[in-house]
Length: 151
Image (tube, rainbow, N blue to C red; front, side, top):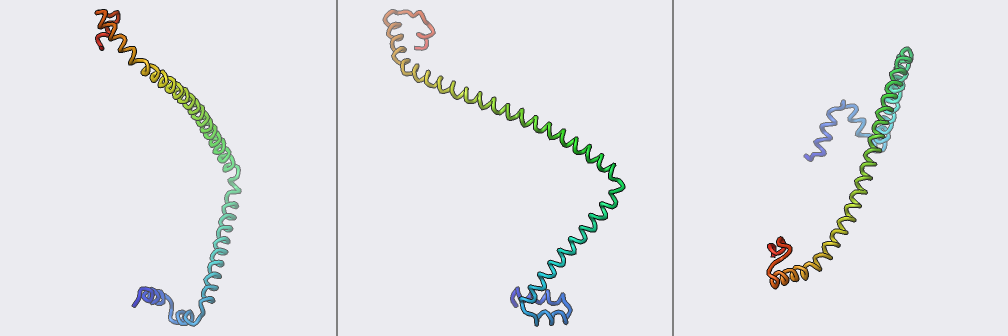
């Protein structure tokens, strides 16, 4: 037997024999219509039950309305206070982020300038080092001993 037939047999045993026979004789469209009607009835029943529960809650709470409204007002005020705190924190963080972005941009500009200066100095450093070496060699002494030591 296939898995599909096993499943059908299992579920068919969950129904009484007369119901099984009745369902076998019906067309697929009739079965689908019944399934849709059952779903609609289930939804309508659920809605009715929820309306009844809401009505019961309203009736029960009407006597405690002032107490609940005061608690709700206190909760609302506390929530607004927390929200204002969060808004202030967010504003401070945004300001801090803007300052850091400005610092980073300034640092990037400074780095670009330093890199350009270094390139300029490196382009002129080789002839300068050679000149100092020649002067030290020919003169025999150096006014800048730390440079001569490096050479």
